[in-house]
Length: 333
Ligand code: AHG
Ligand code: MN
Ligand code: MN
Ligand code: MN
Image (tube, rainbow, N blue to C red; front, side):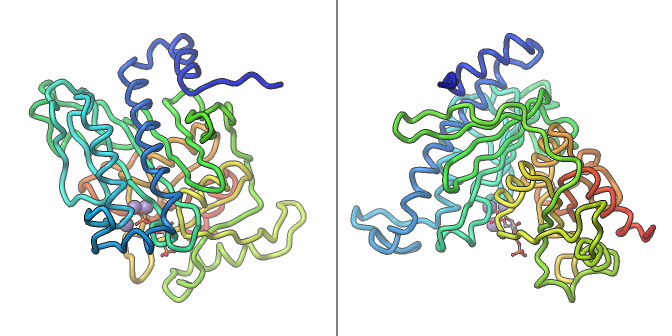
């Protein structure tokens, strides 16, 4: 029988191996795993909303029923923000920065997408939570400001995601490889299931919303056509896989190899995905697993953000595939 390693004992091992990873960061990851359990509890009961009450109405307990993404947002802010470990937080669901209670003792900033792929909740398709952690720049955490959130992805000290799928899996990195844990609901623990994830250099899947074809630029169209051409050497044609939940599309491609493309379109001139909550954390994980992430021109992790809710075109996944995508986007092919 394989040895069971809980997320807690894994973190202890990692701290011994990499003493430079601050113990506070490990505590923060624990908090995220705890918050994920709270979100999971609601996600698996999502179909009961009709019975217990619709979003915007009142449920049988007389409580106002919230949309699940707003519920997840509140739970995460509450579960993670209460220990005074974060000086500042930013969420996809909040227009501006969040200052948690006792922030004057926190040295870190948390940026997160509480529920990614939320349009998929009502139809039982995988959704997720994505998070990104930075050390703040201010000397005085009590005075942390937007500037402490607006750091390039290369400054991240940890990042990860939780996918609420056929099983619940948490994947994280602190810059020392990528590790994944599967939640065992019978004992309430995340158990190490994917140690040192590495992504294949070339994939067999591509993920893009081709319904937006008319909105794509020529480079994107030619890249997608290229992926459909037959070529034994590169294993083309690739298969299409597109769920519409970034977490789920990314997770599959990370494990099996592949490329996810959300380019700039006529409708989304800067792309649709958000740099701080979606692109940066996944780019950190992807690079740690041996993959690549760019906006077509620049490495995602090198982009200097100017706005909390900034969007970016995104090409992410297996290195060979992303390199080819860049050549098409840059008109070199
Ligand atoms: P969110 O649910 O957090 O707002 O994110 C939705 C995103 C992402 O999960 C997904 O990759 C993308 O929207 C899908 O967009 P399209 O429907 O335009 O394909
Ligand atoms: Mn999202
Ligand atoms: Mn979201
Ligand atoms: Mn949203």
